[in-house]
Image (tube, rainbow, N blue to C red; front, side, top):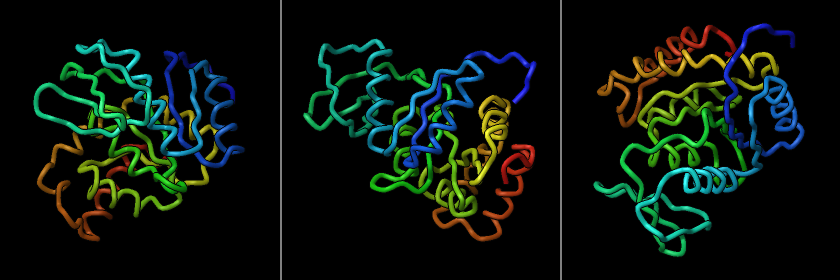
Length: 211
C-alpha cells in the first residue's frame, strides 16, 4: 500500500466480531499512523466509546461511572445514564472521542445498527461507517432507525479501499447535504424506489469505492 498523501492521524474505533478481519483492519490503518481501538462485540464498542467520552468531556457532575451506558437524553442538560443509575451531565455540544467509528452490521448480541443508534443519540455528529455484506438492507435500516444516511462499505473489500474510505472525510461532509431532505429521509417505511435512489446517490458520493 504505497502512498505519498499526508493525512492527519485519526482516532478510529472498530467493532468487528471476526478477530482475523479486525486484526487486518487495525494493521492497515496503523500503517497510516492512525490510532486504532478494536472491539469484538457491540456492547464492548459502546463501553469503550462512552468510557472515552466520559474521560475526555468536562463533566458538570462529580458522579462517575464505568459501567455499560444506557443512553437517555433529556432536553437540557444532556444526560448519559448508566446501569447503576448514576448520571454524568455534559454540555450540549458533545465532542467526538473518535474521528470515525466502523461497525460491522451483523454481530452476535448487539448489532451494528443498535450501536450506531446509541452513539448518535448522544453525539449526532459522530461519523459512523457500516461494514456490511447487505448494503441495501443496511441503508434501509439506517433511514428507518437512525433517520439518516450513513457511509457504507460492502464486504468483502480490500484494505486499500478501507483506508481510502476512512481517510476521505469529504464524503461525510457531502452526506450532510444528502441528509438535508428531512421529509424523505424520515419516512417510517422508506419505499423500494427511495432506497434504490439513495443507494445510487450514496454510491456516487463514495466514488463507487466499495459497492
